[in-house]
Amino acid sequence: MGALEKTPRRLGSGQLRCPYCGLPQDRVATLEYDWVMLEPDMAPLAHTVPAEHRWIELSDGRVTVYGVCPPDQFQRCRIEHRLACPAQPLPDLWPWLTALRGENARQTERDEPEPPPPPAQWPDAG
Image (cartoon, rainbow, N blue to C red; front, side, top):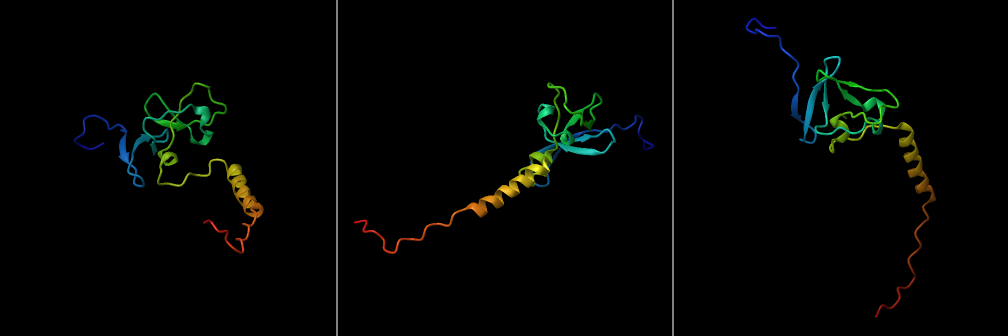
């Protein structure tokens, strides 16, 4: 607190522009008084978001990760803007699914039949 301030400073929140996509994102204080950038105006049902990505708003305006499984069916949460940012790669939310997708991609490459050879003589299309 500076010498000229008569009231203590409070952590404020606000909107900033994402440096990657330029869209607005909410700057919100965490329970540990760090900052997290959340997607504005979005509050999905908590059970639809992986536990380590659920940010729950507390009564004082701060947020904390809510890893309770399963959450209350009506509980709402916030998500980080980086998960919705079109200019950033999506993180590996389910490693087993990413591994399965990679294996399926390799499977299609192995199973892909060779294209038939072109005909020796093209038919007269008249």
